[in-house]
Image (cartoon, rainbow, N blue to C red):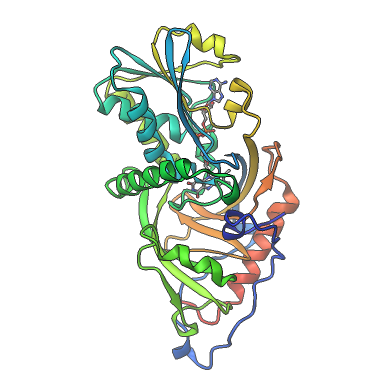
Length: 365
Ligand SMILES: Cc1cc2nc3c(=O)[nH]c(=O)nc-3n(C[C@H](O)[C@H](O)[C@H](O)COP(=O)(O)OP(=O)(O)OC[C@H]3O[C@@H](n4cnc5c(N)ncnc54)[C@H](O)[C@@H]3O)c2cc1C
């Protein structure tokens, strides 16, 4: 079942047909701005993956509570925006936990939220140990496409004004932090991003500060076989490289990693640290009984890299993010599906819908 990113964010139930809308035909090459085509062919698929987004309708949780004689700060439940929000949400969490604390700190979880929390703890001058059931590359964060854009992480009708404030300040810090990390070291780069825009009501959000250079394109300004196209610039994170580099940074600064599975909060209470950050993602459902947390499965087909493709696209056909480690094709948002084995039929649909889309280009570079 395929659902586009904007429809999911808006809570719509629209499903992808996998057929790109055929729009205006170019009268000549001058009516069409060329871009390189993605060679979306089943023979070019180098791997397939499925991951579970830790989704909560009422939004991510950053909250402190007592656990026996310890302070526990929750930092989980970021749905389809956990890479985007990681730095900012972790900043909220550390601002909540660190003031007045002395001594070592424990971070539970080694995904994007755990590693950014651990770095912020170190930057504030505290020793840290990261405890996790699984380390990168075996986390959901490694599966993420890595677009810096706050999509698919809450339901409009379920959030409070207080949460909205938290979200705004998390987004603001993240947005600035990602910018100062752009470059090969962390695998982060800016790319022009094109989106099919079917619903004029959604157009307002690309004008906000996190969609710089946002504009509606005329048919002359793109090669896509579509009527309504918007464009903006944003950053993309090669998640595997970023997480690997973050682990190194934490170790260089004296941090430790320990592989450990905590079945109950009681097991956490036995840790020597007095301040704990819970960054267990979907794991928080079982560990802390948060049944609002549910998986939204996403599947990706990764194609052979094409370095000449330096733009991203999202629309009815699905989404395409080009990275150094491959061209990511995605587009599934499957609620309450726990299976992390990619479904060959879904993968075939993802590749086919992109194949149709790219073969419909009105002109190509
Ligand atoms: C296909 C797909 C595409 C995505 N694309 C994007 C995107 O483009 N942009 C974006 O911002 N986000 C995206 N996301 C969402 C993003 O991946 C998640 O929001 C994010 O990875 C969540 O990070 P996390 O650190 O909370 O969880 P995780 O990465 O799952 O890390 C959780 C950590 O906690 C540990 N843990 C869990 N339970 C326990 C326990 N009981 N004891 C000890 N350790 C435990 C785990 O082992 C792991 O180390 C995407 C997700 C998917 C699946």
